[in-house]
Image (cartoon, rainbow, N blue to C red; front, side, top):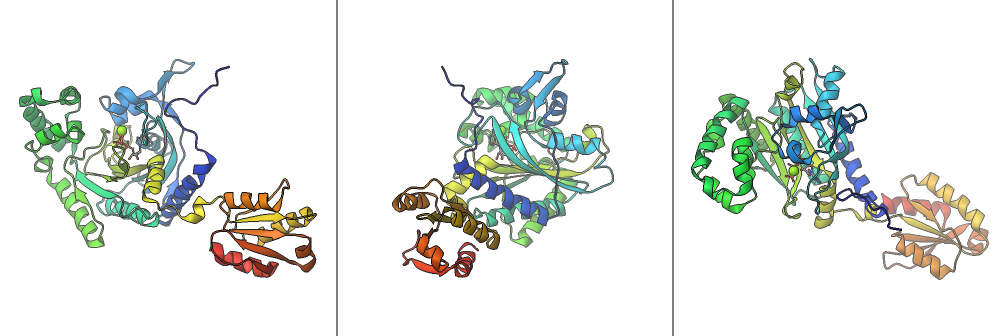
Length: 424
Ligand code: ATP
Ligand code: MG
């Protein structure tokens, strides 16, 4: 019988990779709570209209990437392609936005019908952050500073670059769009198919075309920043000044436009050169108009989202996953002879005294040689061997599996001291 396979672009997270994900998630959640962010959870399914109205009808996401279907009542629902829309919807619905400041985070799967490749999936995991009620630029800077700190914590500071831009207000974008379209109209025959299609639907997206010929063509195009309104320019200059003062490095990329319609003023992306064309690790920006667009009172807002799959790939490419996370367990406890029950008890005692220790009891018998092989395969840094002699003497034998060091015979107290030093 033909086996049923997973859906293309929807991966399983296997035990060999889950420790890396847990490490990423726990590092990020801890950092977020240090900055006063709180978690919000909202459904994976929302009404299709929510995404059409927020992300924009002529964006790639809404035009061709959403998983939409009619449910049994005939209502059009969509699996969420991103988190901001649902987050704003939930906060508005529960009165969390009006006259308040909120610093929130969420995590979970997002769904986009894209062409699956490394770092680009149809179900992927995002961790996102949204701030409501602050018009910046201090909060813009704080958000960027927080994520910069994350790269340091993860050992990725040298692997990522921050790109920064301002998109101004909707009015300044309209004026720029007109200028850009009339410039590109004259060069229409030099545009590729994608850009020709976008010329009248979403011309600003042409700015971040990956086609080098288009990029060349854009060198003489009107400059977005010449069209920015004063308030947006001042906001952007202030943000740059804060980042300069704090020593956060960035590159201004005037062609950074982002693929969702709701952004204005500050936008940013952290990119890496280590993951090919899936180089954007974390991206976001300001969306001051969105709350009002969804029927709320005009509220400044800024947010970002990072892709966990890409982060995991980057940790791998940069080889910065700590050894302690990569190994399955720290210690492997081996009973020799008729000491099984004693060893179970001993394992319990050690775990109580070393709460951070990951200790695996060998179960299922076998020769010492075989058990040592399993200990080695587990990634443990020490094997703890307990035989009848050891039980009688109240001690155990420690074999060091990852360092060139003679084995030791130690009491349980000495072992606990040793293990606490080894894993902390
Ligand atoms: P890209 O330009 O790579 O398509 P995007 O601009 O569409 O990214 P956003 O919508 O801003 O991405 O989502 C934020 C982050 O989520 C991205 O920076 C990326 O890390 C991750 N992400 C987006 N789409 C996917 C996907 N299909 N598979 C895996 N990760 C994704
Ligand atoms: Mg995309």
